[in-house]
Image (cartoon, rainbow, N blue to C red):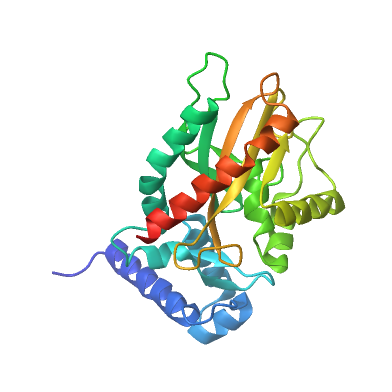
Length: 261
């Protein structure tokens, strides 16, 4: 049976896509668009459209200098359970214990396409509480989870995301200066946690801490997610938020250890 023009076109596009992926898969530092177009012998415009689609689906991302590289999502396809799914599963009971202990909302988030994505949440049992939903996307610079994830990035990648996403003012307390944000991220690295002080939402305060890659646990390992505790400001002043840091870090350590088991 003769293939239809649509089928032929679809196969050709797939071949082009695979050629592109094969050319960048072993180059973790990234490949520039012009170099990649020459390597696969395609017009830059065609390569750019394919890369843009792959990037929008999370299969390709960019290095600090703008070069394209294979993203973790592509490798996750080879695993029975992607790392986020594993963390989500093992985090649930720890998040429930933490929420019960502090009586505030607990969120688990990851970095995706330059934003925080909430992948699990356990809401406070109190009538007045901070609410969240799985799948919510939030800015990095204005959230505790986001600051934790930003603080763990290599400098070039951090600067690229800041150029891409900017520092929008969401409340009067939002950090909108790059210098101020860099100083804030340095504090996050030193103390091992971040605080969102009504920077993302008025009347809400949040503390977040990192969860490390189960394969490389500890402060020198790769941060793969972050956990946060959030509550209304009348109940969660800065001192109380800081007092929750030990419990929060303990939960993060337990999640990483459980994922490694």
